[in-house]
Each structure stands twice: as structure tokens, then as C-alpha cells.
Image 1 (spheres, rainbow, N blue to C red):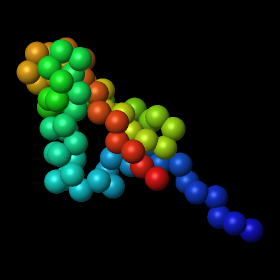
Image 2 (image 1 turned 90 degrees about the vertical axis):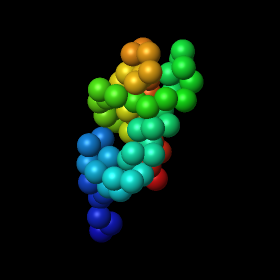
Image 3 (image 1 turned 120 degrees about the vertical axis):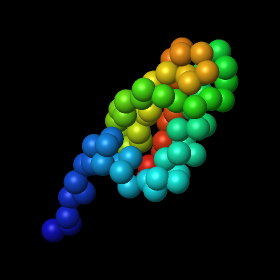
Image 4 (image 1 turned 90 degrees about the horizontal axis):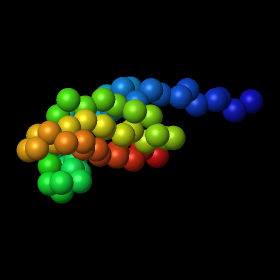
Length: 71
């Protein structure tokens, strides 16, 4: 019988990313006003097998996001 994969939460998936790569991801979010930006005050959300960082743009304070894809 095949083992069933345990579903990881967004936080658990994010925790598998090295701190160095987390910083690269945080510093390459998208703001509709500023374009490429740093995301602050973000929360992690599950999007199928991926993780979405939703927060604010460090430059202007408007909504910003960054999708991180996981296999």
C-alpha cells in the first residue's frame, strides 16, 4: 500500500525555504503601483500546492503579493 503524502500548511512549506531565499522572495514582491518591491506585514496563504505572501508594499503601503511555487 502506498504512503499518503501529508499535506503541509503554508507556514510549514515556507519554513522549508532557506532564510537567504526567503529574503530574496520578500524583496521581489509585486505592487500594482510601484511594481517590484519589498513586501511587509505579510501573511502566508495556501494556494493549491503553492504559498502566497499577501501584504503591503514597503514603498507606498498599498497591497503587494508574491507567489512561491512548490512541487
